[in-house]
Image (cartoon, rainbow over all chains, first blue to last red; front, side):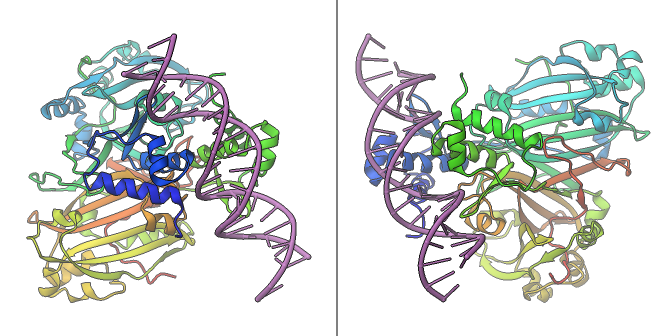
Amino acid sequence: MADPMYRVIAEDLRRQIESGKLPRGSQLDTEIELRDRYNASRNTVRDAIKSLITRGLVETRPGQGTFVTEQIVPFVTTLTGDPETASGGEGTTYTREVKARLRQPQDTPPRVEIQIASDPVVSELQLADGETVVIRSQARRIDGTPWSLQASYYPMSFVERGATRLIQAGNIDEGTVEYLRASLGLNQAAYRDRIIVRAPDRDETLFFGLPEDGRVSVIEIRRTAFDDQGTPTRVTVSAYPADRNQFALDIGKVPAGIMDPSSARTSGTDSTTVTAAPGESAPEPGG
Amino acid sequence: MADPMYRVIAEDLRRQIESGKLPRGSQLDTEIELRDRYNASRNTVRDAIKSLITRGLVETRPGQGTFVTEQIVPFVTTLTGDPETASGGEGTTYTREVKARLRQPQDTPPRVEIQIASDPVVSELQLADGETVVIRSQARRIDGTPWSLQASYYPMSFVERGATRLIQAGNIDEGTVEYLRASLGLNQAAYRDRIIVRAPDRDETLFFGLPEDGRVSVIEIRRTAFDDQGTPTRVTVSAYPADRNQFALDIGKVPAGIMDPSSARTSGTDSTTVTAAPGESAPEPGG
DNA sequence: GGGTATTTGTCCGTATGTATT
DNA sequence: AAATACATACGGACAAATACC
């Protein structure tokens, strides 16, 4: 009897879901019915449901009911090829890969903003105080599902030195990495990724359709790219909802055939591997 | 007026915390006092506090009160050096690095279990049905703070072929990667990491001291190591609480001097960089 | 060690708002 | 417009953990 009631209820429902008694996509009893069934109060039932939401097992839809989440096939983003690929900067691979999995990538054309470099995000660009940055942001979906929000920061000096297309809204078809090489002779020689898990902000909650109370985390990947002089050229911040994304990392010669059977817990990744950089790639004009 | 009351309260408290009006480590007013201050009910105040917990801003201690979380200095684990390091398999670097930051690593000596390979985790080891695996698990702390839980899976055949120390509980001082090379001639030539964010299970909640309702996620890193034949030799699963861990990834020649000023959001990482593999390394006999 | 006050955790019942059908 | 179902909010009660005397 040590366990509180809401957890007992949550465990019972979890077992029913995992045993298949409550199939994916099916509707749970209403909170009122569950209250009667478990002889608990509606609030207690709701606490149980909240914990199931946290675990990604159910979702609630106001006015409709509570539903077992559809089998989520997480998108797996591979953060590495090898350094070659990174410096080769072939950002478009991601779009190709997504399509190869019979999934339809859709990206909003980048929005462009110009800001004074005060944001601590861009301190990594090593700009002097008061310098300006170009911010190119876009939202990505796969098969209509919101997948990531991304913003890339470039020094405004790039534009002044000739990379004028950076401040044009819309896609740069060959990819910004390639464009910066062609226009400024900048080679992306290396990058550093930082992986952080945090609660979503309001924009993210809205775009990804996450629960309001921040229960589902987002994974933030912050990529700082360097040219062959070791000078930082770009910071890209991407946010991915944790309930439908995974990441992979290959070091050394990893055998290719491994079709990741993947995690028990996350329920059988079908593995939409995306060999892409979160660096701003060159998405084809989104669907 | 669109915002619900609990979020208004949460926002107000958040501002007070981030402005420094409520310093790190300080105690908030009790729920009763907050209820009076905001003219709300205690439950509504509690909802606000829950959302602050999710964002890592406060923690509650039963019988004591609600406290602004101490500045968390996230541990930053670097998932790569280059392939060389990986195959060199110098797992002990992690302990050295932690110490270099004036932090005290403490690891429990590995516990050893032997199981039938049914767990889907080990399907990646490509074992036949019914084969057995050796599981070596340990818990890690830094400066007394629970840092990670780790379990490594090896085929039992390694033991039969001569790597008998695998089934001895306790540390393998030179590291298991080195030990397997010395005893079996196995070179760790590559590995693949899988990064997954999920809610903690009961054990993790307990060990890491996370809130009971799974509000704070754990980051699971699942490393499959391969020898130079491309055969999987090990699967290591590590769980890190997301509120005090970050990960880094260096691809190409990343300039060394960059002392990651890091994220605005996560509040000034002092960056305890750990160049270690989550692969079972050779921790010195824990404190 | 024991007892008491304080504070958070769990649970209840109810009322009203809002989204969906 | 009406019914249904989840979301928010209230107020009260008792349990459990902690601190202090």
